[in-house]
Image 1 (cartoon, rainbow, N blue to C red):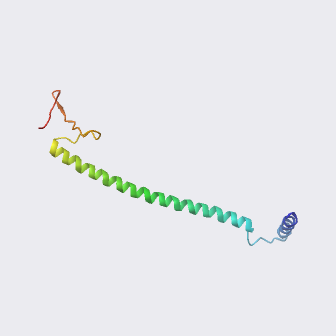
Image 2 (cartoon, rainbow, N blue to C red; image 1 turned 30 degrees about the vertical axis):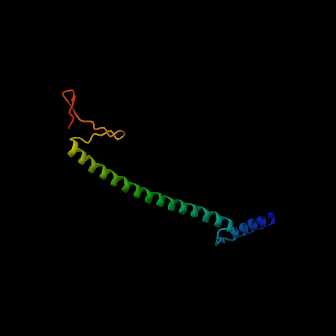
Image 3 (spheres, helix red, strand yellow; image 1 turned 180 degrees about the vertical axis):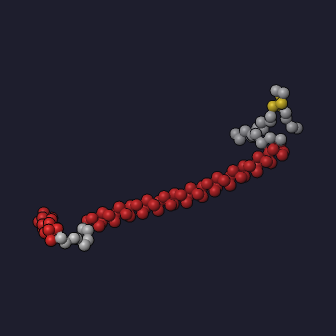
Length: 104
């Protein structure tokens, strides 16, 4: 291995003196640059997948918000308020003059 490296460096030095430029990079350099480019491309693909999933989730969330707004409208019409405790289902009617205005 040492002889090969010494021969390559000697050949490079001679070629440099002659003004000859190398036509290709070494196989090791080629593999390394290919690995780096593949890693970048893989990361881009992953980001694209994540962004697509994010877009889908945002659409789901928008749909859920629309459904909530419709339910709030229903509650407003039926109970006069849409203020409901989502843990207990208790309606929080607005207080008027310090008293709770309950609809029977």
